[in-house]
Image (cartoon, rainbow, N blue to C red; front, side, top):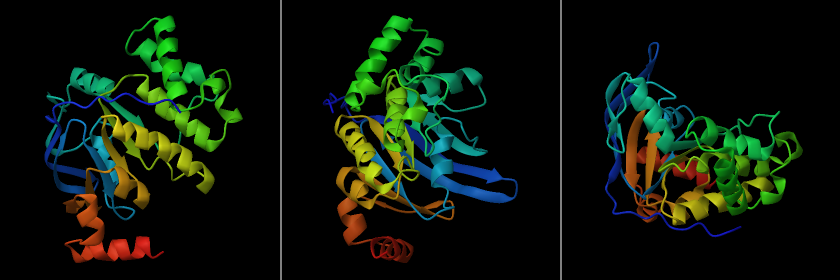
Length: 255
């Protein structure tokens, strides 16, 4: 897999969330989330199912709408203004649990679709950039195949290449390995490790504790729609502050 060059910047805040609330009907799923993320920072979000992790990162590109609080992405306030939402989505790439590839399009066509239609690039430029990213995630030889001809791990790497081909500043990962067979998880985590080392701002929801310990600048632990604890990995894993965190780690690490 080709090395990914560093994008490290000065460490200005690129994500700012203050007192963010979200309801599904009567269910209060996010209860006052406040987070600041610096450019180039890698954040891993942990927590039990139903804790609000995925909902939170989906509010950052308006896949989920928050009802109260402020979200500012790279200086742009996330509001009902469609232009702001479109601008933020150009800078925020998301990799989902399911690969969400178009089965009737080849790998390269999947990767170039958004740059051609959203960035308004020429097909030639989109294909050049797309092949660059397929090479960097280690599967350039799959460019002419269809998603159904690939393994789950390969499909997820295509999904990552598709996201990177839009040249976003921020990458969101929503449990990207949870739909994969165990032997395929490593190849996706290897790509994510390279991205983490190369200066992308990353927020990753995952249950992969080794990855969290190794690459995160900071770990956020959520439960019940609130941030229970946040800390650097060393302290989070060896000296958690809250009883809820200790219980979660005991269940996960001793499973």
